[in-house]
Length: 608
Image (cartoon, rainbow, N blue to C red; front, side, top):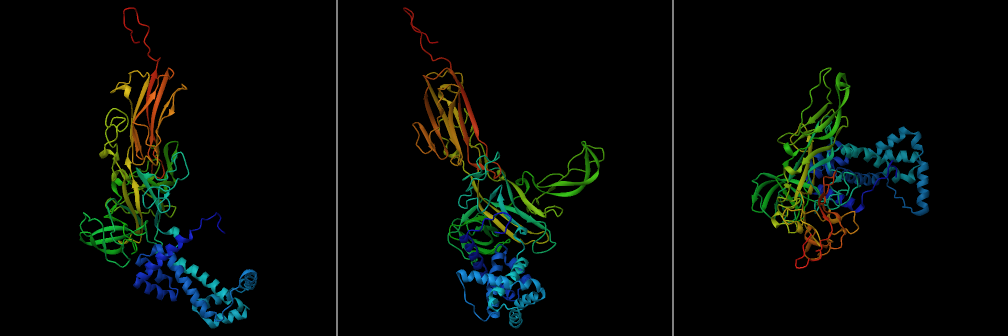
């Protein structure tokens, strides 16, 4: 109500579910619960914050804090207000609220008394509280005053425990898509269409897989939210090898059962998808077939329950080296750099320098009078571990664009068979693509970790449990039967047999079309069989595309030039750019339909 812009409120059911998971995780960690409970009595935010970080409960911080506040306010106000006041409704409640508002005007002119009142609530000093309440005539509002002051105290208390959310490291987006609300956890594809733009004419969905180089975003501050002055670093890991849980696990188990064995030798890390979205990192210390012994809550994650069938991603590897491509602009810093004087280096001046995450070479400062070059600074991920240190001179206080992940380095793609586009070569137009060449995408998990530069442990982590990557090109073959093998000069007369083949795993979410156009009114336009129908024989269509021969009677078509176009556009996006379509064109002419002239006496008719 009081925000400068309208805020979309969290859906109530999801909020209660999130709170339930947080409470369950806290209750299952008995040692952490004992420390937090003892500190909560005295509102010791430093101890509670330290314990939350140590237990890996950062993502539950606010919920745990407000749980403490709800309990403590009820407890303290019961002690301070011994007389139970009736709960009013309707007009009486409105009048009571008005009377309470008028009574609290005294707070504005008595700051010392208000300070004493806050101290009394903090220390649970019933005598001091009752004396001030009675002196100010606030006896009928004992509970309201206590609740008001208690929640004011709790707000400061929770800021101490949980620094503002925007300061916490977090992985939130692939391109423009939110990883938890706009990428389907079951398919790993987009579940919505964003605003249509020139770069994203289809809005990236819905049901689009991802391809090519992906921009991973979120936030990593320059300094730690919990350790003032400590510089931060982050990295991403990925995994393409997975199994699933054959039985559910709770937060206390130290072993799990999976549906298939792993090729990795212990110890190795796994990421278990605990809620259909983010995952818990565990270290597998022993393997007996499909029964694994594990160490829980590793690398900044929290021990949580997971259902049977949950994905178990095996041995995540850092996104580093050639996988980080191209360098991505993440921020700016101010440096001293030669001024640009009509293309030549002038005297030094304060200049904005672009900061990129990736591999590149910072330019050498040009000498006075030498050709000017713009400054730019590259922050390379560690070639082995993938850690990226946030540049402390970055003027924004952190990075929001974090990395570019070149997925073709780990997910195969390209042409699924020779001659995938055009004809001849590969699968002839009109024929099905061989099963071995009907390529499919690959599921990946992407895991984010952030921590202080000075430590080896991980302070924060969250992950995208599943993203569908498809780097394959489509098959788009088009030919005319009348042309034979490679001869486009054969005449078109009474019949045109259009042979086509279209194939791609994501063609159903994209689209394809087959049409004949001309300046002549006899051109039929769109001739693509509907995907929902079986198509007229000998045409076969499916969610992957279609193949066959469309037969057109051209005997009554006008003499003219014609273009046949087979357009394909599989449903693929980087989250910033939708993959453009491919148009395969063939032309032909009808130059007067062939009719034999009258036969000469004693002779045979001749064809023109």
